Length: 278
Ligand code: HH2
Picture 1: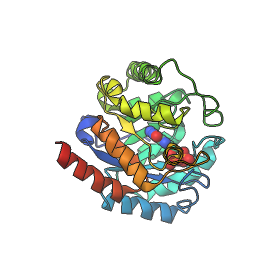
Picture 2 (picture 1 turned 90 degrees about the vertical axis):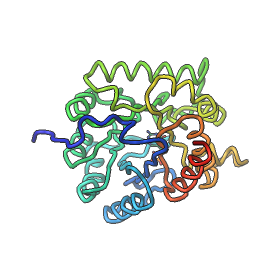
Picture 3 (picture 1 turned 135 degrees about the horizontal axis):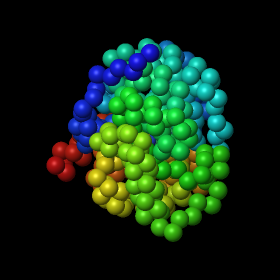
């Protein structure tokens, strides 16, 4: 089937003005904060629709957990989880959180407009072609190692320069593969092979990543660094209040898209922050 898209021509920054909220819908049994909650397609669809009503600019549908220690999911299982949800989300702006070319291709055919690839086009060689051929938006994220092992002793010369150099190289790769640079956003990958201190340093020095000239997406919502910061060294999640605080700080440092689980709280906080900072 030929890929047809109604959305050619609009840059990602025009489509998602600062700040825009991306709502997270994990159709998985094991995601770190909402695992199992949206495994039923009807529940996932209702959650996604509610998020848009609450002000999300887009919802990110994922069928594979990438939490620390998670194992991969076979393509058939991932399709089985996410396709019934994407199918029912006509009229809702959808991002597909996948590293698999086939999952992306099918979701784009059903109208998804963004591919969120946590491997930054290092997973399946076919994914770059699918994105290039479709004109979809793309998020390139930094991850050190793979989810199974990424939190084992993460070390960098300088985390911010290393992540920025990596994303600059992946952006060049994407452009070389025929993807329009104007359709790409970059993400330092909070929690993907980083210590608590490294995660906060990435946000503190976000201007260095913003200087690459592409919109920056930040996903820190409910992540364990927030729980650890607040005194629980064994935390696997963080609170909503801490998530909102970190998202507002990231916005102030230049983030464009905030990927969050609690849409209403973030939309309210970011609206107030925008009014105060504008
Ligand atoms: N974080 C997660 C998953 N996908 N994509 C981007 N671009 N940025 C992120 O920070 C990011 C992401 C992990 O969070 P979540 O989806 O809630 O959990 P899980 O991977 O366990 O499903």
